[in-house]
Length: 164
Image 1 (spheres, rainbow, N blue to C red):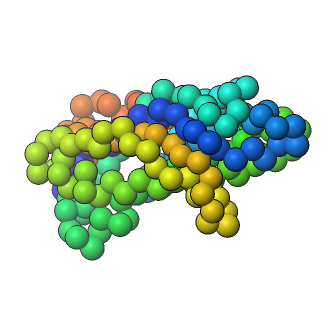
Image 2: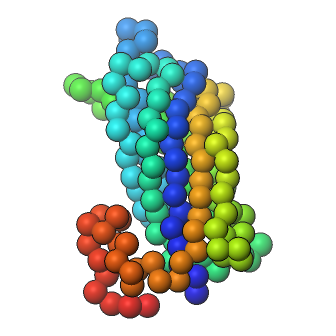
């Protein structure tokens, strides 16, 4: 069984839909999900429809070998859910983008590492209309010793007390 680190570099977004009553006042952030793991970006306060984050997020991949099977690649996806932070009401959904990472994981398992360069991904609104674009890059590094070498503190501040 392969293990490794999936690293996502969240760069920026352009043309996000403004959901606030006062135009240009959205404060976007992104909830990034990969197979039960979740991270949240910083809030791009006052940046409106064209925010910049330049943040990196790491996800532990425990069964990278599964990505090598053609039927499993669709399960390896990163979902970028873009939200508008509101102080006095519930945060608003601004759209979602999906990055399929099965191929980059499979290539990384074979070659030790693989990368998807910074790419624009289409942001889709709840009604499936175009809602702007978001840019991100993805890197996968195959490392069978990931948990044993103590890098687990990057994923929530604790380390497994058992070995696989």
